[in-house]
Structure formats: structure tokens, C-alpha cells
Image 1 (cartoon, helix red, strand yellow):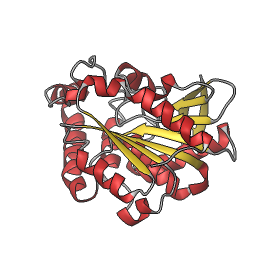
Image 2 (cartoon, one colour; image 1 turned 135 degrees about the horizontal axis):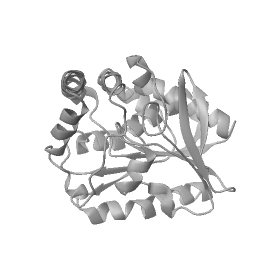
Image 3 (cartoon, one colour; image 1 turned 90 degrees about the vertical axis):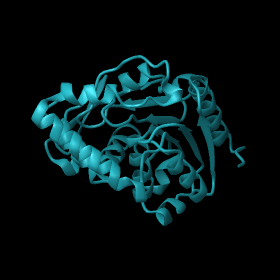
Length: 265
């Protein structure tokens, strides 16, 4: 384990492997690299001959955070990511992979520093654009709930939400954000969105989009719109737990093929 200071927060990270191209793996809102592993979302686990950088976003997992809501917008989290990459692998081109909030972070980072990324793997893209307002209202309501009733009420509400078919057999996991910081994290998420469609279309690196069905917070429509706008992208949809089991192999094949220069969509 190692740590890095970024704008008032300590980011906890680790790097597996000592040689090969670097892959940076992110996670989703209220999750962590440990929790994503429990859910089967450690997609880099099948990759060989690469270095794997995994870290907890500010206020998540083992990382610390601040009470500033703006620190949790996706452009702000992209600044954390780019600063961490400058620390771990200065000047190096990397492969990025991450679900939901991780997808938002990666897209904003790719726009801020286009030369930094060799490929993007966008996993379960979140609500965006026209559908984002309704999701933002949910996040604001959750923030108020945590302040008024505590984190247990928030966890209870989450336990009664419909589960995507692809996560039918996933283990129960805990929220990986401290109660003190969770309202700020939620309000930061409420105030952010994916980049505009025309900006997404300008991202020229190869992209693999991994989505699942039956999830209002991660609708297929976002994944499909990203695929339509990104000229060098492929989309794969998981409709059962077996679909998710295939993702690490698909990711490893994608990154390896990009690295060899043989990729063709």
C-alpha cells in the first residue's frame, strides 16, 4: 500500500506487477477497490504482463476526503486521477478502466489530458445528460437522509432497491464512505455529469463499453449513446452473472490487442 496527497486528501493506492504497460483501475460511487473486488468488478485480474494501479477515490475506502462538495464532481476527481498518474507514472501512456463514477472520471480525464490514455474501458456508465436531473434529485435526497437519519437508513434504502440481473448472486457489501463525508460525496455527484456529447465524440482512443441491463442508475441508454458517439468503441452487455464473469477476459483481450496495434472495430 502507498499514499499520495491531492488537494487536501490522502489517496490510498497500490501497484501490482513490476513490468509492462500501466493499467489504472477506478471504482464506483460509495465503493472502493476492495468492495469492487468482492462484487467481481476487479476487471484487471486476468491481465498479464502489465502493471495494475488501483486506488480509492477521495473519501472512499482507505482514502481520506474533505467536506467540500465540489471536490467530488467528476472533473475534480479527474484532477485527482491525473495527479496520481503524474506521481506513479510521469509522462506514461496508460489504459484506464472504471465503473459508473469511474467512467465519468475517466472521460473527463481523457478530455483534460488526451495524450495520457492508450485506451478506455467504460463499465456500467451512469445516468447522464437528459436523464441526469432525476438521478441528481435522488442523490440530494440521499444526502439529506444521511444527515437526518444516519447512514443506516441510507443502507436500508439501498438494500430494497431492485438488483440488476447481472448482480443476482453478488454478495452483500457495505458503503465504503464514512457517514461524516457521505452527504458531501452525494451532493458532489448530484452536481456533475458526463462531458457533452460533442466532447465525448472528440475522444479518439479505442474504447470498450461494458454495460448491464435492468439498472435505472446505469441505464443501457447511456452506454449505447457513448458507443454511438465514440468512433472507436465496442459495446458488450451482460444480462446474467455469467456475462460479468466474462468481463475480465474481454478486458484483458482488449488491452492486449490495443497494445499490439492489431485492434479493429
